[in-house]
Length: 392
Image (cartoon, rainbow, N blue to C red):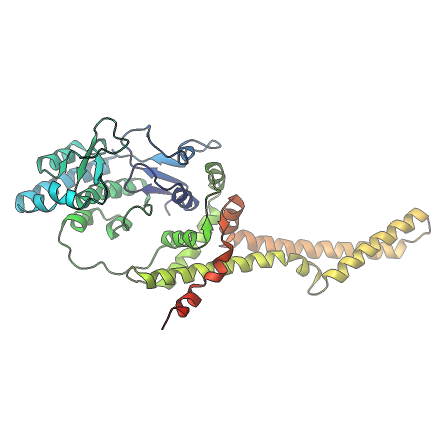
């Protein structure tokens, strides 16, 4: 089970709340940066790049120059050169004119050249698949970025991401500003990257079940507000991974219930139904804990037992002060009651504490204590009811 995640495909985290949500699931997030000191982070992101309580930063850099990452880039360079040599239209389909036509903003898809091995930089330049941007990225202070066709960019960054993630046992994650991760990224399949982005379209991928990470993302979107979380609290939470491991295992079970489905509204609703079930189970767990005192005294006996105990305390106190000799058997009875109540309480409390500590939903309580706000209206958002209301 990976404890760290690789951020794809950007250098800068564009949504601080996305980062907080990801760090609820992973111990740290690594990113692909060409140099140690990253400039241009948002002020809300900067605290996550610093150590907290003796722990390494929650947002760190991955190793772009591992043997695996270097070899993967060299292999991609050869594939690009071969594709251009065998198909004269390849450089046209993925060249500058088509890249400009597909721009969704003035910057297009730009890559910092210092991320890339010299073989890959050369292959992109010599085949005219990389070119000087017409609008420089805001943090490009030395003209180090090149622009590429978005599919070329995805192939390059995916190749690098899969190699880095495989080398360091990382899961690959992205924020909502990125397109949905391709199957080759989710499966960390290095061989499939070129064909996925630059080869023939081929058949649609086989539908798959969501994993525990995707279900957790839906949980955050469905019911949570992470705006009050900060780096210090997240660092403290990361010291004990057992609760999140328990929740992940339960999320895996719920993910299997969704089953393999193509992306779309039906799949989303099925996942939200599972999240609703998880939140209901968590609420039941908390209700059982709050029911402790009624179980302590026995069903329906809490008020009578408590009043009797208070009365005995007052009477014993008055008798002792007045010197009336009130005590003996009564005090013995009170002591016996006290011992019985304490013994029962210890047993009941120990049982409830054991259940609470091993509950797969305990991590949700830890999240709440750390500052995650669970929206009070999640109970009104039952996906089954909403889905039925909209049916014709």
